[in-house]
Structure formats: structure tokens, C-alpha cells
Image (cartoon, rainbow over all chains, first blue to last red; front, side, top):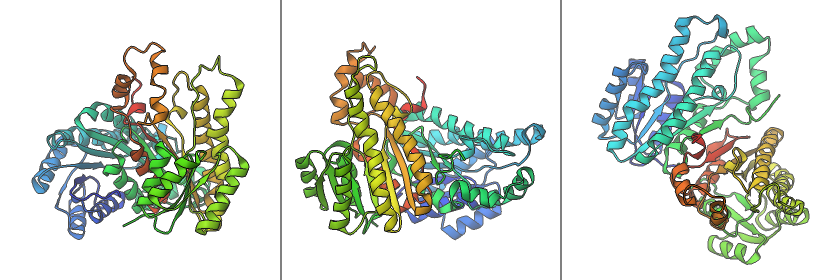
Length: 252
Length: 252
């Protein structure tokens, strides 16, 4: 079940964190992977470690980079079946105090980056008779959080892009879904601890434990991604699958 | 590798349709399944094909559900997975439905899930933890005429899922719901004519094709149930997973 034998996948933001964990599991399940990241050396090292088909630098906010990464992936793997639009950034700041430059950067990477990923992947997926796209959203896409205003808006936008792409691409046999993880044990979440504690005066780890029991692991996000990417999810499209150990189920 | 080796599962309403397919999918992944249905013959016939055992029970009867859980423990040594699937639909406009029919639908579709949680969870916790999967419906999120009692009960199932997930987290019991769109089952087939009698602009099957591409299959629900029942969804709890071919993604 949820095996990816024979599938060719491109994963963005794959040098570290969630993207790396997804790449690792995809390889374990039999997929061929092509890894990209804005950190060219980092992703090359990860690709080397995991036995990827190749890697390249990609600034997901750049249309030229996006086009080039898919061309390189198809060249290296002979085609494309799965795309994981994972690359994203967080910026912690009070929403109304955030600089216009930071807000634009957030939208460029987290929203436009996902849109460009779907836009440039689609012709290759269509050429192969269909495929699957998984976009990385967040529980911040379904609920708000202090200091994460533009991030929350960007992740909600990812859910909406996912819905519309799913409906429009259904006839091309392309499924599009989003994953919405809660706080996962990554460097990105580590970076949030101090600013959130400074603003709210609440102990971040205790609050996380109360709301979601523990931090999730990158491997657990990878499992959800692999499920949605696999043929086991053949009728799931346009959905956002929350992965949060009951964080958003709770009011308190 | 089988995901549910050495696990004992109960599936209610398992004599046909989604419950039968979920039972088959769990068994295919190595689980021992107690196939339960109000129709003893149907349950026995499914159990004969997949192993495990069968147990006739009315999902809305407290005594029956208690006996069902006791049967799993006595016969198979414990309980790890509960799939609360049993459900019925009664077609009638809200204004025009008898209180008796309303109560019959909520008794099975909602009380049945409460009883499965009420008596299943303690035994699952005692064995070191496990999972509960409640079969809800996309009608929990958006309505359709003539199935008001069904939809209200399914929305309540999603709410119950949230509370159960929070209350049972520390006991190691994960609780999730599946919200399928229209699946190719007897329950849906028997009701097409009633929907068409409302004066739809097109045949019901064409409307389904426009909204959700095609009918989902019981087997596709089975695959998601396996994912949520097993270790690969270890950070999922309290969520309602929509499986609908994109129907809910579009407002049109």
C-alpha cells in the first residue's frame, strides 16, 4: 500500500526539513526523485546521499527557474509523475508592522512559488497521461496564529490554489491535494519559539504539548504526502489533509 | 509489507458497501477483522471470505455494541482498530419527515458512533492504544435536499470525532473521520430516482460526473481507512478527511 514503484517525482525545498524527509520516504517506497532547492550545494548533497536522479538550484518564485527545474527533471528521469511543491518560508512579525518587502517575499515564495510549480509541471504531467501534485500548506492555512499573519494568508492561498487546480485538471487525470501539518520538529518551528514566547509570554513547548500532544516528525508529514501521491488516494483531489494530532479539532 | 499485522479490528455495517470494502482492505493488510452487521448472513458471508469472525449487532443498541466489543476481546484477544461505519439514509424533506424516522437515522448514524467510541476506546486504550475511524460523509460539510437527518447526523459525527480525539490523545487512541462523496453503493443507487424527481437540470449521474468526476468506489474508501487505521498516519487525529473527487473544492 502507498508504494511509489516506478513513479518519477520532483520535490522542491528538498535540501532539509520536510522536503528532505519526503524525498527520503519516496525513495524508500520505490520512487525516482529529482530534488531542488534554493540552496544548490545543500540539495546536491542531499540528492547524493539519497541516491536521487539529480538535483538543481531553484528559486520557486522565479518562473525561469521553475521551467528549468522541470525540464532538468524530465531530462534526468525520462518523464514526470509526481510533484511536491514543498518549498516555503516563514517570517515572524506583527502583521501590521511587517515590511512591505517581507510581505511580498512571503507571497512570492509561498503562493506564487506553488502556482508556478503547478503551471510549469502541468504540461509534463499531461504529456505522461496524468499525475499527482501535492502542495505543502499548513494548519496556518486553516487557522490564524500570532506573528504568522502573512504566512497564514499564504498557506490559505495554497489551499485555494489546490482546489481550483484540482477541478480544472481533473479531466487531464491530474490529482491535486494539499497537506496541512501542525508544528513539526523542524528548524523552521525552532525559529518560532523565541519570538512567539516573547510576544505571548506563554511557554511555546508547553502550549504545543497541550494543543497537539507533541511535535510531529518530518517523517510523519512524509507519510501523508506519500499517501496522497500514491494510487491509494486515487479519488482524493482538491482536498487539504490536516495532520495535527487534534490541534485544530480543539478550541482550548 | 503489511501495515496491520497482529491488529484486531471491528467494522460495523460491514455486510455490504463501504463497510465490506473497508473490512477487505484491513484484512488485506494483515488485520483480523470482526465483521459486524445487523444482517447476520451478510456479515458471515464477508467474514468467510476474509477470515476473522462475524458478529450480528445493531449498531444503535448499547447491549449489542457491548457484546460486539466483548466478542472481539474474547475471540481475538483484544481490540486495536474500530471502524464505525454502520449507517442508513431516509429520504424525506425536513418538513415532512416524521420524528420517528429522524430518530431512526440519528440512532444508527450518530448514537452508533458514540457507542462504538464509548465501548471500543477503553479496550483499545487498555491494549496500549490504537485507532478509531468514523465513516462520516461530505454531507457533514454541505447539504443536499432530502437527506437532512443523514447530513445532520454525519456533521455530529465529525464533531464527536474532534472531542474523542482530544479526550483520548493521552490514552494513545487516535480518532479520525472519513467524509466520502457519492460512492458507487446500494445506498446511493437506491436514491437516484428520488433526487431526479426533484427536477434536476440533468440526469443524476451526469450531475455526479460534473461535480466529482465519477462515483468513488468502496475500495477507495477502504484504502484511506487503512491509512488512518495504521501506523503511517501516526500524527493524524481529530481530522475529517474528504474523499470526493474534487466535489467540495468547487462552489459550482
